[in-house]
Image (cartoon, rainbow, N blue to C red; front, side, top):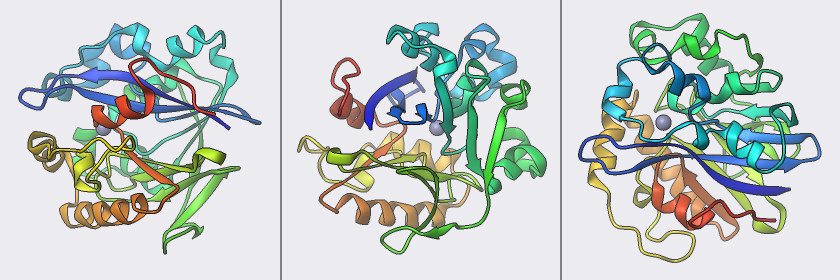
Length: 269
Ligand SMILES: [Zn+2]
């Protein structure tokens, strides 16, 4: 499986610094697969309706060329080549690109789908943006904790080598997405289960030391749903990342994206 690390949106929230949206583009036997989407074309065309007031806090500074769709096209492929999208959760900065790939099957946990769409509570109603799924994605929902996976964790293998590992805390149905990248080991896209990579690792994959990012941690606290679960998730991700062939990557820590992708997205195989 070939893996590309893409940045599919950049934000500049006050005091926090540059925040990226780390997306994986996988070339699989089942076609192209995205793990999260970042922002999509419609988000830039109609920011108010699509992203709501939270965009004023996050402050997107990227544009249409940064969307997953435009980056897929730059590789000579088309929207129809993306057959599956596997989501960590349904916050607007992770799913805005869904409408750019209307034929893809969209995988998420049943809990996250319920939180965002069928039974949102008061906080959820303010959190998610229904305009982003108004086109009617082909949802494939994965209920419960799933089967035994590894390290005492459970998961749903949604495609060969791609496993949704439920990790609620940031949102009610949040999950990590584990990708078996063959010779490159196991990549664990942690989504928003952790923001500051120094919460689970002393060094980046290249060995570069990771300083504590206090503002990113503060931001994580503001947008997280269950603080105790978030602390537990950090411990779990640290344990996973300490395994020799496992690389944990957060959605928003630019240092890890730069480390894995290089200055421009560089393919791994
Ligand atoms: Zn996020």
